[in-house]
Length: 166
Length: 166
View 1: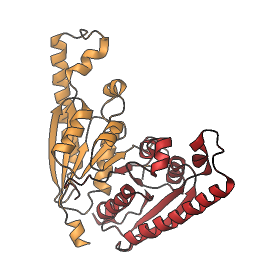
View 2: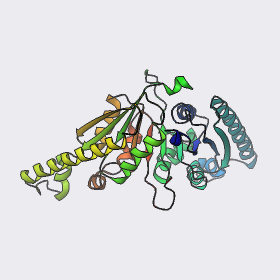
View 3: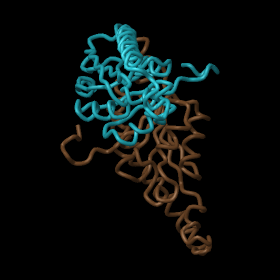
């Protein structure tokens, strides 16, 4: 058993500002990373691309460049905040290396490309993927990733508050 | 960390006769169950219902009752064989309780209902789910389960033989 536990694994966790994502990370820390100090946990946050905002009015010209710049600054701020919170959740992990990556782009592409490029052993994500606005336009990110990523994909749903929150 | 490791978890693994399923079980044993002797591993096999065979000719009368009975006996034989193989794969697990369940029915329903009824902490399955014939008729079982099961769902894909079989 010691040999198995000592195996080095790279685990990619897609994080965002949602409670689902926060729960997925916590669940992963408690259930997957326990006791294996040879793991590397990679936290990935994707900042929505301009195109997602621009499609809001159909013509692509709803927002001025000032507003777009403000939204991008806001997104970057959110990314920093999410990463800070996620890293704090990882503090209890003994010896696990934690890396963070912030990428700009469609969450579906960002996650699939990162999983491939980093040759991770596992991808963990919340069930609804990446943010409310994007979900409405792009459909389920987790569904897309489960179908397209080659490594094992763990989709974690935040339990409804019906007592199944173990 | 000791408290976390001592948590009792129920892990449901959907098994079938495919290599994908066998790989998913092995991956789960190596990556999820390692070192946690308080886990209960539940192996679930669903025997296809008659309806799946009957739909093969469109009218539902292609097979005589004798042939259907033979196919059911064959399915039961396959189930026993798969379970035997799966249990053998679990022998190396120190102290993990292993239970087996064989249910008749549509794999999608059988898995979702078992996950719910047994209040499992995690569902593990191969990416293509349950058998070649059924997949052609019913679509992706894993996709359905990932969307409908409340607990975390781990979808494991068997790597292509391109050297990523770590």
